[in-house]
Image 1 (tube, rainbow, N blue to C red):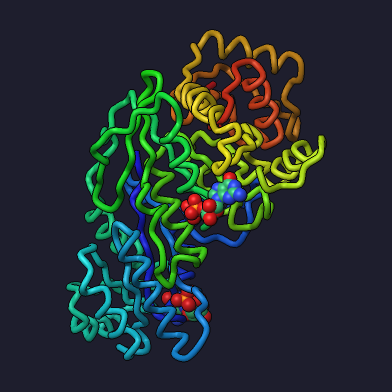
Image 2: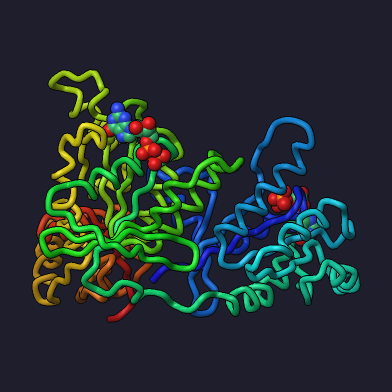
Length: 437
Ligand code: GDP
Ligand code: GDP
C-alpha cells in the first residue's frame, strides 16, 4: 500500500528540520546503520498510531538571484502543494506572524491540499497564549508544539493522519505489475517508456489510468499486464523547481510507493551521482523490487571490460542493494530493451515469493549448524524457528530466546544463506527477530 506523503513547509529557522528529525525519530538511526546510505536525509519514514508515512522537509532549497529567500519559499510551497497528501505549515511562535509567513499562507491557501498549522517554539505553558494570533492565517486551529522539548507533536500528528487519503491499493488488481522508472532528469525515462511501448507484441491500452495526481500507462505483453506509474511526472517540464533534487526525490517517492518494481535509471554516459543513491535508497527502504538500468549505453566508449567495471561501480555505490540485477541498454537504439520485461517479470515474481515454513526452517537450521551464532557475555542466541509472514517484500520473522543477541553481521549471514537457497533476486528481504523461548 502506498504511504501518504507529508511535507513540512515554512520560512527558514522556524524549526522544520528539528521537527522533521523528531518525527522520523529512531528510524533515522536504523537507516544510518545501513552501509551506503548517506547521512544527508531528504525524506524519512514516520509512524504514528497505525499509520506509516513519508515525510519531507522542503526547506533548504537554494535559489540564486534577487529575493532568493522569497523565491525559495515559494518553490517549497509549490513543491508541497503538488506532491504532498498533507502539508504541515510551520511558523515560529516566538516571532509572531512575519511577511514571509503571510506569503506562504497565501500560496497554500489556494491549494486544495489539507493543511495543518504548527506553531513551533511553544516551549512552556506560558507561551501557549502566543498561538492565538496565528488563527488569523486562516488555517483553523494552530497546534502549539516545541521541537526542543518534543511536546505537542502527538496532537499535531493526530490531526495530520486524519487527512490521509483512503487506501488505494487495489487500484489495478493483483495481476498487474506496476513499474516505476526513476532517475534524475534527462536520464532517459520517457524515452525508455516509449521504446518499451513500441516493442513487438506490446498492446497499449487506449485509456490511461488516472489517480488523483498522476497519469499512468497500462499495457500488456504476452498475456502479462503492466502499468507504468506516473508517466505524466516523467514528461513534466519547465517548472523552476523541476531540477531541484527535492522535487525529483519527492516525485520519485510517490511513484515508488505505488510500484511493485522500480527501474533505477543510471546515465551510462555520466556515471553514478549522489542523487541516484538517494532515490535508489528510497526504493530499498520502501521494500520494492528493483533493477538497475544503465541507459545510453550506445554512446559509451566500450571495450570488453567496460561493462564489468561499471557493474563493480554500481555494486560499490549501492552496497545495500546487491540483490538488484543490472541491465545495460539503450532506449535510443533499442539495444537489449527486449530483455527488460522478462527481468521485470522475474523480480516481480521473487518479490511475491512465499517460502513454506518447514523449508525455511531447514535452511536456517543448516546455516546455524555450519556457523553457530557468536556468544555475547556468555549468552548465545538461540533461534527457535523462522516463518515468512509477508510478501512484497518477503518478510521473515525469527523467533529467538533474546532479540538483543542478534547482531547485524549474523543477520546478514542468515540473509545470505536464505538468498543462496531461494534466490529472492531483485527484492529486498526483511528479517525481524521476536522473543519466544
Ligand atoms: P528550519 O530552518 O525551519 O529547518 O529550522 P531549524 O530546525 O534549523 O531550527 C532553527 C533554530 O530554531 C535552531 O536554532 C533550533 O535549535 C531552534 N528551534 C527549533 N525548534 C525549537 C523549539 O521548539 N524551541 C526553541 N526555543 N527553539 C527551537
Ligand atoms: P527523462 O528526463 O529521464 O524522461 O529523459 P528523456 O527520455 O527525455 O531523455 C533525455 C535525452 O536523452 C533526450 O534527448 C533523449 O533523446 C536522450 N536519450 C534517451 N535515451 C537515450 C539513449 O539510450 N541513448 C542516447 N544516446 N540518448 C538517449
